[in-house]
Image 1 (cartoon, one colour):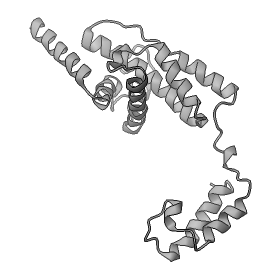
Image 2 (tube, helix red, strand yellow; image 1 turned 90 degrees about the horizontal axis):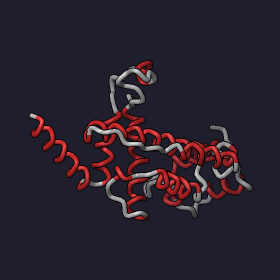
Image 3 (tube, helix red, strand yellow; image 1 turned 135 degrees about the vertical axis):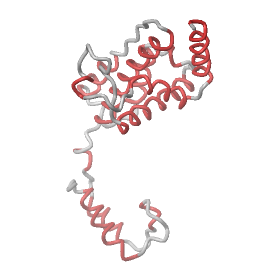
Image 4 (cartoon, helix red, strand yellow; image 1 turned 90 degrees about the vertical axis):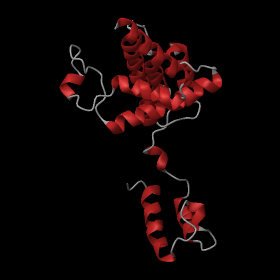
Length: 208
């Protein structure tokens, strides 16, 4: 029985290493996703559902960040086994993202996702290898705080202002401009243009 379990674990490990970015992130997601987990249990250190994720939408959001991070590691670090992630990789990835002046909300989302990745990797080590591994991604919070303090992140609310919004609105009304320029289908009916202009006006002048 023990030998059979050992063989099964080895197969899981081999599949994990050979798996794509998306396969590996799905296996890690299984370690922390529990749809029936209650909120009080997820914040109780003594409960088996402590730090688990109960929302499908939230889990998919985390996985989206993980996939991006894993692809970054493959391209820039040559890492294909994501059990080998260390603090330095977390720092490099967040520094890389900060270079593009992300929104404050997006960087917070990245930080939270990497925090859940740390938990998932610890569960994976325990459940698959029956051992404890010391993953410490706390550098993510330090980098997030530093980016906010030094204003390396954008505040979307204040960045909605345009130097000349009236000119932008007039350009929308210009019949020489095609619907495709505004991300609309080429067969956009002319009757829908006034509503498009009103929507753009509310966005530009911060009325959302």
